[in-house]
Structure formats: structure tokens, C-alpha cells
Image (cartoon, rainbow, N blue to C red; front, side, top):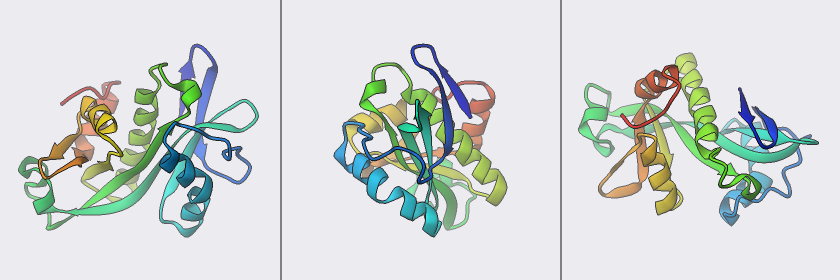
Length: 179
């Protein structure tokens, strides 16, 4: 997928590779920086997660997200999301989402999330799945995901869910706003 950025050109989302310059990536959250630089390629090679990056200039990574297969127990989700589902609900986990500090305050976080969710929906079409799950790293991140229609459960406020079918409908409507 490609997203236009009026201030710096176009970002192209692509699967991570050793040819990408990601060692200097800084999103302002050390845990997310470390995961990209130390674990993303290994997770990709092992098939435990797929990481996609936005590139700028000479293969410099300025954003990334990681997706992986997942499942949740029906009793862990709000009843309206789990209704009619099996006890173990197949899902896609949005495991990481990070934007370089150089791109903060440009309203690109929603574009990055849209890119990630479009790929998650593609995965659901290819192999099945009912939910998209995210574990927000902070209250601020949780508020970001809630703004885009994700819902939390009272006893696990940082674990958020959204039906893949709702995400797909929102993507077709060109916005991910609240449902």
C-alpha cells in the first residue's frame, strides 16, 4: 500500500528485509525501538510475525507494524464480539505499531493503522479470523486505538478488540472512524 504525505512524499509499505536501514529507528518508545532492531527479522524468519515498514529516502525505516496469528477465548471478549463464535476465536494480533518521532504530529498514525488493518483484513480473507486484537502499550496508545473503534474489556483495559468484518466495512468506506 502507498500513502501520500504532503510534507515528505510517499511512504511505501513493504515487508521488512535486511536491506532496510532500521538500526537508527526511534519512535520515542524504547521497547518498540528494541523490538524492531533486535527481533523483527528473526520473528519474520521464524514465521511468528510479519513486520511491514514504511521507507523514506535511502531505505530508511520511518514506521513499522507487525501482525501475527492469534486466538482469544470467547469469554475474554465482550459478548457482542464473541456471540456465535467458537470457544477459541481465530484472530489477527496487531503486535506492534510505531511511527518515527520525525513523523509525529503529522497525523500519520491513522494512515499507518489503516495500512496495518488493511493487511490484517487481507490475512483474514486468506486464512480466516473473526477479530483483530491489539495490546496497547500505554493508556495513550489505548486511547488512540479506541478512537478508531477498538473496544476494551473492563478487567484488561489495554487489550482491545474489533471485529474484522467491521474493519473491512470501515476500510471500504475510506475511514476507520468509530463504530
